[in-house]
Image 1 (cartoon, rainbow, N blue to C red):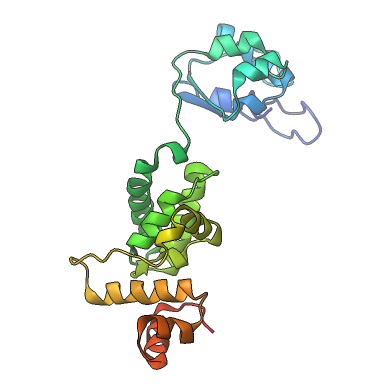
Image 2 (cartoon, rainbow, N blue to C red; image 1 turned 90 degrees about the horizontal axis):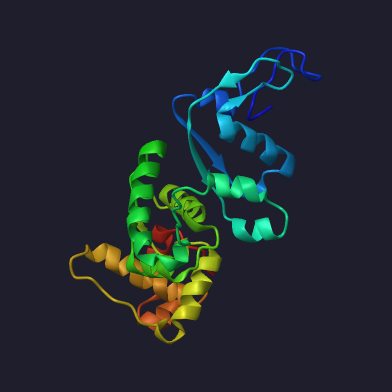
Length: 247
């Protein structure tokens, strides 16, 4: 019914005629996401449509012709699915036209920076907030993480920091703990080192230094003050501005 639509009375609850996704795509593009998850029965029906571009709505008797471009996407290895009997071989060969293989995000880390900038701009406009600036520690942490959820996971993280750090600097400490752990495991020997850019405002640099010290001391402000050689009151003042969890 979702793909082919249905006629009124075709099944319980079908009170009116409904066009399916195939019929709605006439003259355009039919995008089938995760086609590897399609049940075998539905695969057979889809194959029949692809052979002659004609189908009938569920409960219907009239053949409908649709001319549409077909685009399919999947995370599954369809060749293996065919060998295991989970995906029809005839449908696999029918949809195997121009194939675009998109590597996972962990294999194209150079794309992370441009994606982050694009997502920040989009979310700042959508939520009507000032876009944050991603600090060096946060950038390094984002590149160190493997992103098992790929671009969708990255987009979700960027939306979170865009809201929580609107108009401010995003630090590694602002990222989810799983990303922070990945960064620490990748560079354990350099955890106490950081680069300082001379083309950034001094306040931002100080914020990042204080944030790093608090991160290394698990939020303990007294130890962070001793590490930086400043007074506890100074750390308290900056921690309040940074809105970090300290104790």
